[in-house]
Amino acid sequence: MKSFDNVSIVLEGNSYFDGAVTSRTVHFGDGSKKSLGFMLPGEYEFGTAEAELMEITSGDLEVKLPGSDRWVHIKGGESFDVPAESKFQVKVSSITDYCCTYL
Image (cartoon, rainbow, N blue to C red; front, top):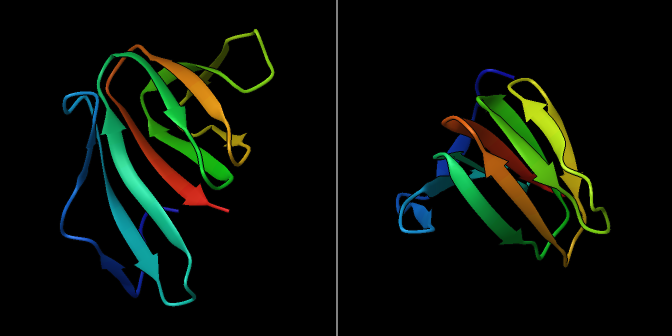
């Protein structure tokens, strides 16, 4: 999907890791929400409250998902699922855009 229709966007952005990861929250009429953002090169660990679908729209990274000791390469056009109440790690090798859908 290249664009979203009929949404509201929270003006205040989210900033993590001293600004190396940022996002904006998007609310849809059906009550669902997503966040759109980017990550600069680096290594990060994130925690989740809800299950998430992480879609990488451009760039590339490696991800280590909960319960795994294996790093998986993900590039623009690919995605991965993260369970609720968990932590996952990423190694970002180039500026990476993402869309996170809260499930």
